[in-house]
Amino acid sequence: MRRLLLGAMLLLSGPAWAQGADWMHGRWFGTGQPEDPSQMWLDETLPGGRFHVLHRACRKGEAFDSVQEGTWSLKGDVLTIRIEKMDGQAVPVKTDIYRILKHDRTRQTYRYEATGFVYNSRKVDARFQMPPCDLAS
Image: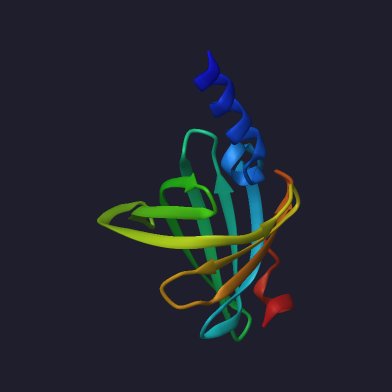
């Protein structure tokens, strides 16, 4: 009983993202990539550990979309993304590691550990649509 109580106290005293990742569930919109600040993405992070993300690059008003799918997991402040499909096709699994720098239920900031690039996104509702490229490029 003492160990159970100690374990519960440690869980409750840890960072919010270590207590459960339910804040991650939902749709997140962000803009910017290291080589292209006009790129945007709409990520749907599902409770069962799956994700679906639409990436959009805008060139001269035209949209170039790409979809990635796979799994995600969170341990402490480390977010691990495993990309399993691109544009509906199975691909060799690629694992990306991000560090959550700050978050709340509406915004998150995280760093891609391979490059140090920092991303920001905001939570959006189910009706949210990505802006058309004629407004973004």
